[in-house]
Image (cartoon, rainbow over all chains, first blue to last red; front, top):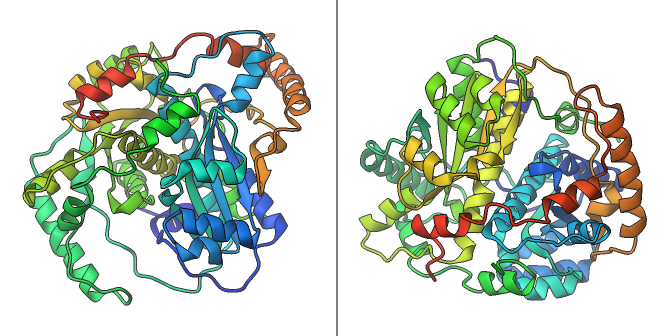
Length: 247
Length: 247
């Protein structure tokens, strides 16, 4: 199958965590956020906001809050992308209607809208030759992040996004084999035992052979360690505090 | 600012709901799902699955379940993209570890991973000259959808995606003005009253002047009607049934 330039760009994704001194211009930042704006949105709610952060002190603080991820501080521009129903509450109040965002559905819509925007932004930046990495660590302490950025009720930070010109060229991290993630007509797990074993071999080789941070590990071991404890158990309470999950 | 081809494609997004008879080839479908596989994923969990659906009966059934959206049936290929922790449960069981996915965090991770994959897929398809639309209506009756597709525990359908060659050329739907969605350093709602009023004028004009389904409406009226009632109140219970939100 002939690959378009778009598809080549999409399929050459790797996370970039080290950046050169090259500045990202204001015009480039505008073009990146403009690309975010054109993401699809369920029922046209557009339930997201983008915070553009270039202040050294603020990036430093966010790096700390995201679990000491130094590249949050080092990248020339950092974006915090939030689920945002606050504007919708304002729009609704204008017409004196009730505002019902208390169900799980709105949490899903906020997360989905935000992620669609973020992927557009990352791809737009990559098309300029930049690279970046998404930062889930922004949810480590969403309350402190919200305070730092002045986020109002009916919002929550979903992810960060570091953007800049790459100062590294990491190998691509092997993805789960296609037969483990793509199903035809109905879900088919019959190959999982074999496919996951194959993937463990592939990832073991990747972790041993990659140029940086070599280690002995496999994907299934990594996942079994990761899911052995509850991750970010505070998120539910935080969302309630922000006005969600009431019903 | 010079726009890359990628950025032009991203910023020319419009949802396509009518398709020509032109077939989407198997090789194109493979290339589209392969593009999905290269989306970023938090902690490399890759918590998604793609179901490729071309069976006429199955598309017909899904169109009905998604609220009688005829284009789900009419598009040549329909994808259901699911949050999927079932594979992760299998990987974890291999190492006899506990499997803790009971917090809100996993719902967010599943929704985000899925949306990143979906946006890659839509853009890959668009780069071939196809178009499409994402279908949140797949969450109208997630239990029936899961049954139809044989989805196991620890999964939930997040969205559908219709893909095919466009048989329509709709105007772009105006997005919220940039100053309403993009903030610098901290969240700034001081322009909202003015900006939302402007946007109401823009959307009123759009709804009156567009070529199909003209109506008298504004964005804020549309949103105030939409949020006046709780949307998809069943999602929370469904997620619990699938193994989420236990803690």
